[in-house]
Image (cartoon, rainbow, N blue to C red):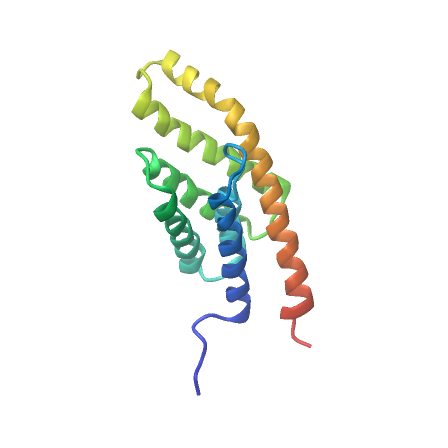
Length: 165
């Protein structure tokens, strides 16, 4: 008999991430995207560690095919993988986990911006992070919004449709 490659739960997790990534492709406030939420969500909900990393990275890669790759993409993907790791280590979503993911993403990606586009001095580093703060506000709000939407949406679907009777 045919056995599905993915379980129903895994299919729902993938569907949530695919729907979320579409919001990167529509007009939005700068940095108000589900990027960190997708990484955290995958890390938390996939019990298979390979899927926890590969699926979110692949979904991110697909959206970048349409949006384009940039000189800091390696730092964005590194931060994305770090946020997946944070999700795999927590096993449980919380405001604290979302905040740690957001701060980690901010620190890693802006370090990359500093390396590529600022003087390699303490002043350059401070200037880089200072100028990034307005974008971080939107990132943080987006992370909280999309993480909440994905987590509570998944909990609803899981409770209503995925629990065995």
